[in-house]
Image (cartoon, rainbow, N blue to C red):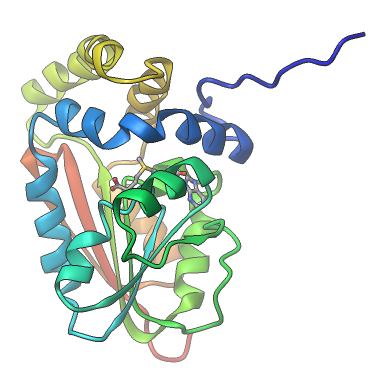
Length: 240
Ligand SMILES: C[S@@+](CC[C@H](N)C(=O)[O-])C[C@H]1O[C@@H](n2cnc3c(N)ncnc32)[C@H](O)[C@@H]1O
């Protein structure tokens, strides 16, 4: 019997880590471009909102988990924080290192981070938590590496709050988004996964409940672009 190529082009909703990493390896080169096109120019606004929610002070140590090519980390570096972009797709890290050579990229799995307890003043994760195989394990691991009193900001696709718009958006996700991705991405199938994973993701309130269940305190959220995206922020309580 001959050797078979693994040839994964997209992950399924079981989010097997090898498939997720392979899928992002595959889209790495054109990831940022495709992202900007699909988000209809909203990404810059969302990234500014994440920066404001984390409110880093110069010199603070910030973990940007699932940082991909580091585009989500750049605003923190510009604000004078020591940001550590971490990701498990070597393809995304490679592209990031080429485009953002000043950032200290780290290869690491969000469910088993290569950092000591309480290493960071804050952590953030943009469009990454949805892709982590076990999001609760990821949220607990983030709690471990953030110091007591430190902050977490999760930026993730969510549920539009106005129901007529929710219906239109759902159509956009399942029909227009894969069609647009066919023109911009090297792997359009990955964007079918994107659409499916957004639809299967918990809404704002359910994700807030997950954060509380994982030990995070002072959990709050705010909607961006009518709830297409939500920012959840939380604080690590003393004594956990
Ligand atoms: C949609 S990209 C987001 C990249 C970046 N944060 C941004 O906002 O553009 C999601 C990233 O999550 C990473 N990822 C998924 N599961 C991961 C895990 N368990 N540990 C580390 N990174 C993970 C993928 O490799 C991918 O680079």
